[in-house]
Image (tube, rainbow, N blue to C red; front, top):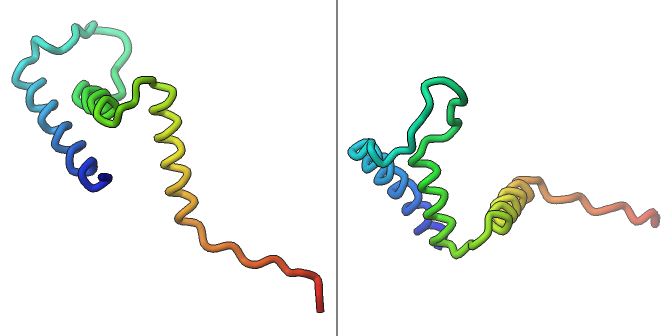
Length: 89
């Protein structure tokens, strides 16, 4: 299933980006001065659709699962633990 999602997410992003470029009237109004968005609108749409496709109904659960997955990936990258010395000779 992960391989399918790895293919769907970029395709969804490209499609959303192309559609938002073709229809700029769908974009929210932006003030000429003030804050600058850190992510593009297509990225936000992609995250929202992926969240819905995966069945997450709350932001808290989505962030928990994403954080857990990144921690699991980091643990997989660690070298195996050395056995503890028993103190017996």
